[in-house]
Image 1 (tube, one colour):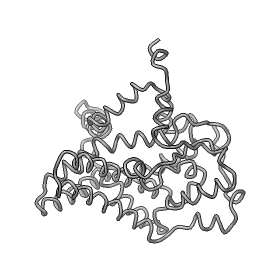
Image 2 (cartoon, rainbow, N blue to C red; image 1 turned 180 degrees about the vertical axis):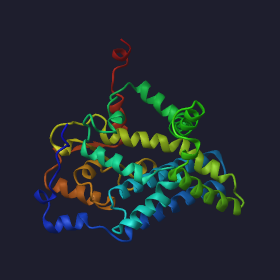
Image 3 (cartoon, helix red, strand yellow; image 1 turned 60 degrees about the vertical axis):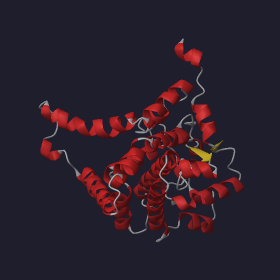
Length: 318
């Protein structure tokens, strides 16, 4: 199918408005990366200073959300908007954002730009994330249980990594020497640095308990909620303002689910080279210009879950 229609910003914004919205800062991207790591460290320190079950759960949730924040900043870099210097933009994404999580900007960028080119079309590589909805409430609960118990992490991270080795043992696929690639190398280098740093401070257990556990539980959950909010049950008509959803997030939702303005997803899809720190301004301008009725806007993530879990239980089992 042909690629989806694009919005010409010049037909909506004045040159001055568009200049402000599309302008990239040389310091805000690095500051966001630093803030993500500061929040990660602060959340871990919360449990270390006040060790109890409540602060541990809170730390896992906060760290898992900041891990999502690092993935969001890698996504920002895929659009070239994390920093105006392309080399620094990519380096931060590979080593400070995606690297510690096992991501690869070189792999992610073409994949993600294909998603933008064919949003919600058969060629969209992310269509599998939005196509199943709506589902039943029980189905959503099962998905969340798989996320929180590490099953999703095992399937996506461990089982996926073991597959090439198993293929090699069976005489198929790549050779063992070709299996380790740069994403895995960056992952282990950055994670080794975390382990060395925490061990030097006397907290060797912090890496598995305060980095891997959030990555295996809360991070997959909020990643799933994010994908549901962005594209599940949106229109696929010719109007680009209907291809993605903006979720109006309250402060708690931004703290535990939606960091770095990721909830302004309609604005991001319409103007994908606007830096994330300008998406809220873009949202306000669009509302002022009367685009509210064309946009897909939902009040809060609870409403997103209600809509995505609206399939009738009786009809599902009939």
